[in-house]
Every structure is written in structure tokens, then in C-alpha cells.
Length: 516
Ligand code: ATP
Image (tube, rainbow, N blue to C red; front, side):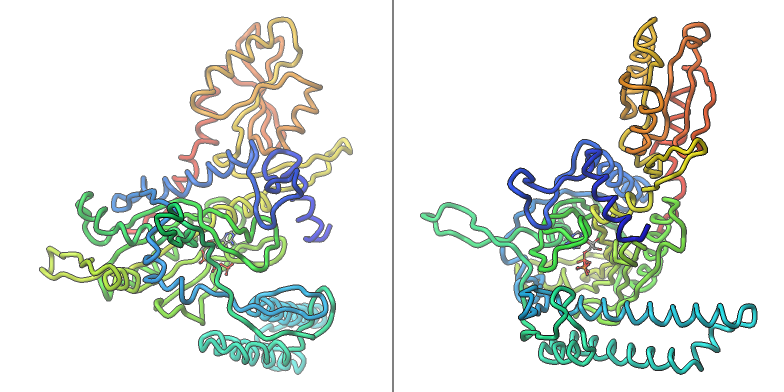
């Protein structure tokens, strides 16, 4: 199965089992907007809890807030979003399809990297154990040619983006001979800037309508509350403010399912530090955040850092954590050293002093900021695409299983009476009542036990607890584990401890490293 086929199956699976539906589906959907179903919302809430607890419970110096989506319009002038939150757009005149110029170029660069990797694979096969990759890269004419061209286009792209040179961007697309994937032609329009913010009106027209924006990031809600939190929480530097909430961007290229949405959710944390100490903190947060991802157990080589060459004007360091999705390595989280840009701008635009008085140095200053910013929906996609597996069983049957980390699973345990009679359902209901206050559990008595196992595998339930006739005699049940499909008997009394030890959030939180 190709990665593309796998991805299509995953999307179908998400719908079939109540994880994710297209928005307003009975009206044929709304592009790049999705709804989470009964399973999806549980998974999403667990991911949010994992992040929130890692930030606020494991760090004494990080607190959370929940700011409004609507903010004063001046906020977005101060932050630079009104003037510069743009994507460079280009249209193909034949297919009439619209693309982001930078994405077209990045896809082209990724293709060159793949070509180089293929050459290296060929070399490895040819020279077997004598193969020296570094030497091959340095001497093979084909690799050298591909690499030189790739690097030249990359350098020109970074320069054009940094200088906002739209004509230059177009020229690079033409020079790289990029064709439209739909029409196959190189008939491109000019490159134009397109602002990604949605706007709407606040107040009735009679009062004088005012344009306001749906926030394109949650971070500004933290910046404008910096002093409120610092003062009321008596926070001392360094300290952080965390927030989870919706953000909205009028994305031009809406594809790849929930990877790029117009309405999505972010988990952002701004960590305020002394000026001059930001790069040390940046390095620490890179490590802490990478550990958070790796604790999920999807394999360390499924992640990589992508350090930014093109830095936003306010940043002095930036990196992305990329995950290997079925469609390639893509950003799930950004870590940015944002200097004192945002707080300074809010000071300037609001006319209010936003300073921190440092009792250790007796100075007042505007703190510097390290930001960690991660998309909830991209995390959902990461977890689902890592977990989705089609397995052939020994008896020749197939099963689809979502092998997702147990603490994130929507349902922790299913309680299944072997038959619908003889008092077994009553016992199963009692077990359900015992577990339901601490865990999301399901009772299921329909169909054969095998079919019920398959249903639970498909939604990623770590434990199936079967009540049979022996239960009536000795108060034990069979526990069947999702990944190994192994079964063992345990006493009913031991169930809460078993589920908690493996499916409680603590199991993931214990693997965290703390940034101090
Ligand atoms: P991209 O380059 O993919 O557009 P970005 O660099 O603009 O992303 P940031 O502004 O750094 O993204 O936002 C932080 C995080 O928010 C991203 O790492 C991503 O996980 C998430 N995110 C951003 N845009 C979207 C979107 N349209 N849909 C879903 N998640 C998003």
C-alpha cells in the first residue's frame, strides 16, 4: 500500500468510526473545515490535556489563561498581522488553480531531496559494504549537479521571501520549471500578496460598525494579558503563560485533510525571560518539546527539527518540529525566539507601559519571549496516522487497529458480557459503573465477541474486559490487550489500578523532561 492509499484509508476510517466529519456535510461540506465526532473529540481532549498538564502541572512557573477570540483591532496592527500576515499567491492560467508560491517551491525542493536520496540508495546497493555516503555525496556527478541546483533555488527563494520580492519569486518558479500539478503547464500569473485574516463587524451598524478580526493566532491574547497575569499571579521571571484556543486563517491552499484548516486549534505557550538569556531558553525548550513528542512512542526518527533560514523580522531564532506524515515531513510545532517585539509593539500602540521590574537587578525592562506553538489538529493527525495499522492475523483474518498511546485513547476500556443472559450483563454494568467516574468506558453486548473486539480495535481501545460464566464464580474477568491481543484473567478489584497505570495521563507525564 502506498502512503497515499494509506492516507485515503485513514480519512475514510476517521469518518466511519466517528472521529472526523467534513463540516456541514449534508450541504456538501465547507472547504478546509472539519467537525470532530464522538471519538475525535475524546482524542482531541486527551491531546489537549497531555499538553496542558505538561505545561502547567509539571512547571511551577507556567500558568494558563483563556482569552477571547475577538480582540481590539489595534492588537492586529501592533502585531503586524494587518500589514504583513500575507501569503504569496500564484495562479495557473490553464487550470485556474491557486497556489502558494513558497509552497510550490518547497515541494520542488523536497522532490530534489528525494532524487538525491534515490541516487544515494543506488550507490549503496552498487558498492555494498564499501559504500561511503559522505564520499559519494562529495564526488558523484549526478548528486553534485542535483545538489547545486537545489541549493541555488533554495538560496534564491529565501532571499526573495526575505525581501518580499514577488517578481523574483515568480522568476524562480519559472526557472525551476515548476508545472501546475493539474494542468501540467507553466502558464503562471503574477505573484500577489493575500491577507489571511478573516474579518467581521462588531456592534450594530447604527452605532457605527467596526471591523474586527477572528484571531489568526492565540499568542496575542497572552501578550496583552502579560501584566495582568504577572501582577495578579506575582510571577517572577522566567515564567510562562499557556493557552489553548481556536485560531482562524483564510488558507489559500486547503488540502491534506486536517493538516491545513481554516478554523483550527492552537496550544501556545509564551515564556518570558531576561533579555540576553533568550537563546539559552530557546535551546532548552527545543529539547523539552521534542521529548514531549517522542514520549508518544512513534519512533525518534519520525521527528526532525527544521531550523528557519528565513526568520520573521521579530525573531532571532526559530525552528519547526516536523513529523513524518504519510505525505512527508511537515511542521507540527513552531518554536520561536520572538525577542521583545510583541510587548514593545503593544507598549507603543496602547501607550501603556508594559515593563517588568526585576527585584534582583532593580531594573525595569521589557522581557524577551520564547514561544512554543503547536496545532491541536496536526497532533490529532500525527497520532492517527502513526497509530493506523492494517494487520493480518494468524487465522487469516484482517484487523484494523488504532495503536495509539493508551493515555490518548478515546475509550480506555470496553466491558463485554460474553452472552446477553445468565446475569452476565448485570455484572458487566457493575464493572462499568465502577470505572466510569475515572475513565471513559463503553458497554457493548451486541454481536459475537470477535466482532466486538474488532470494533474496539478500530477506535483504539487499549483494554477489552470480558465477563463470562467463571466471573460469577470467582469475580475474575478476561482482559484482552489491544496491541498484543493477549488475554489474561484478573480479579475485578484489580481493574482500576490496571487501567490507571497504563491508560492514565500519568503514564505519559512521567516521561517528560522539565525546563528549568
Ligand atoms: P504553515 O507554514 O504550515 O502554514 P505556520 O508556520 O504558518 O504553518 P505557525 O504560525 O507557526 O504556523 O502556527 C503554529 C502551529 O499552528 C503550526 O505549527 C501548526 O501546527 C498550526 N497551524 C498553523 N496553521 C494551521 C492550519 N491552517 N491548520 C491547522 N493547523 C495549523
